[in-house]
Image (cartoon, rainbow, N blue to C red; front, side, top):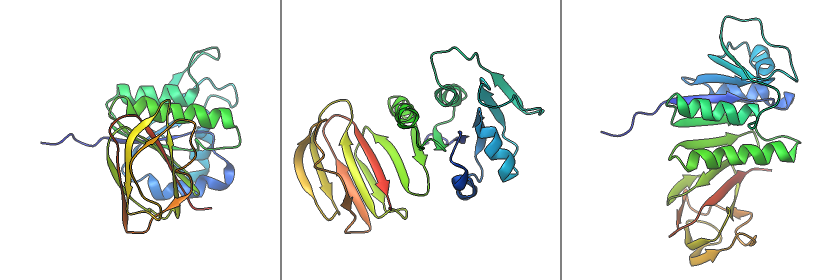
Length: 209
């Protein structure tokens, strides 16, 4: 028997113009709001199952929902703590909404959340209208999912013997180095793209703008 899928969505302090987009991705998921992400839940008419935050950027919600109050001075961001709490509770399919914003440092920290999950064989995706981001540690087949372009970056080290098939630009047994932009802005040629690689990690970014 395969592993049972246990899904959750973590809603962070997203740009306001994106929150309606979330409704298409929340069905059947346990919902965690990270700090000011609770404000987005209110605007969507959602009551999260779990609220986590230090509430330095927003007031602590007055609600009966389970709430974990974090200290302001801490090692993890509210989102990273929420990811770790989700993993602790056995969720193995994690969607981060609102993790891509104008603060590049916050966005990069949220990419590290994806890497944290990848290291533990947990499926994790960060999503907005224009981007879908994942960290890959194994061979993968993916579809467009509405995104026209895809880019690959070797994460934290070389990606050895990378083979891309089904794309506009394919490669065979190519070592993609961490300082190489060769695999940026590729496109799907077939319905699916297959990625194979011997070792390393890939940051896969699908985009449509």
